[in-house]
Image 1 (tube, rainbow over the protein chains, first blue to last red):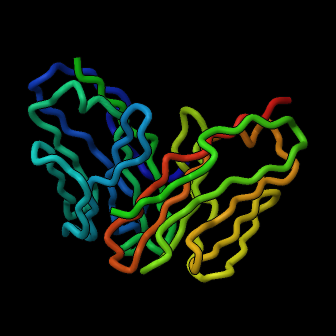
Image 2: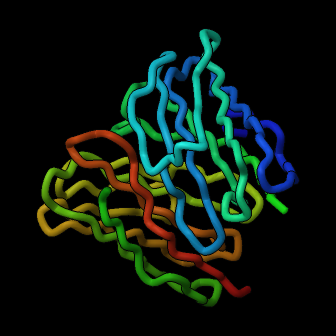
Length: 115
Length: 112
């Protein structure tokens, strides 16, 4: 158990809908990262928050947004969903703000299926 | 975006075999390299974090080396066991320190 909690574990929805994925980081970790893993692709970095502020942005679509709340949990909002958004979405946390020299702790992921 | 490549894509070995995989990354502006182990239906778990050229790290039967000048890292598994079956991911960060970029992984299958 990494200490990172993600909900829901599975989610099935229709195209055009909006969903919210939630992540609670490990106790004491200030950084939260979101990664997307689509079929046959590696982990793609979406966005990172540190202590409530956006720190780094990857190839995150404009239809996606995220935030980190004062209690350090984070939410990833996916809107106007398309079939291609079906993927496993991972949240990870780390103590520091860059995750360079500190390891990332991953949640179990939220599997999104868009029909 | 960094280009992090791992080879081979997949590997089948017999129990007891030793094996190794490669992670290649841009040598310029290197900052850190991570190795993660990802078992099916679980979440990736960190094996090693390496920052210095020539670093060698070991955890049980698994070890890793780092060559930042030529831009590669090797992961070695000595005497593979079926429980070593997993996907091994490497991830790299440059001095821009914006994000860890992951390779596509090497899927290892150890036959009993």
